[in-house]
Length: 89
Image 1: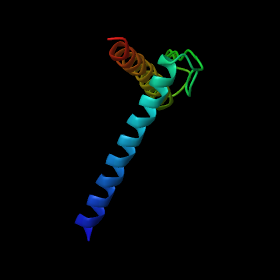
Image 2: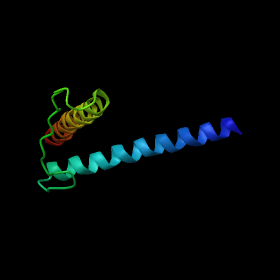
Image 3: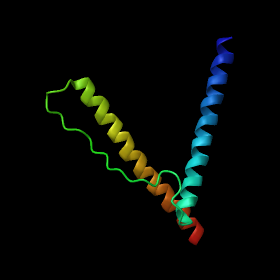
Image 4: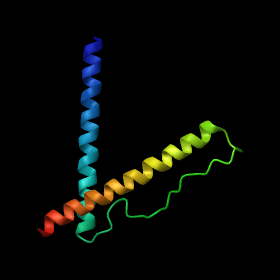
């Protein structure tokens, strides 16, 4: 029973990752075609500075969230470049 549950969870996770990749590709193609597409809004996320006024745990969660967003944005830019480069070549 545990093995079946684990296999189902792994299957669900694999499907989720595949769908996210497909969605990212649609977003990238839309941008290459000149359309805005999902995710075209631009926000600047800055990691907080630790001032000692907030707890370390809160600061760390905020810092991690900002870092993940920044890295994700950079990865999306690379993906956009890759898809656009393939289209023009």
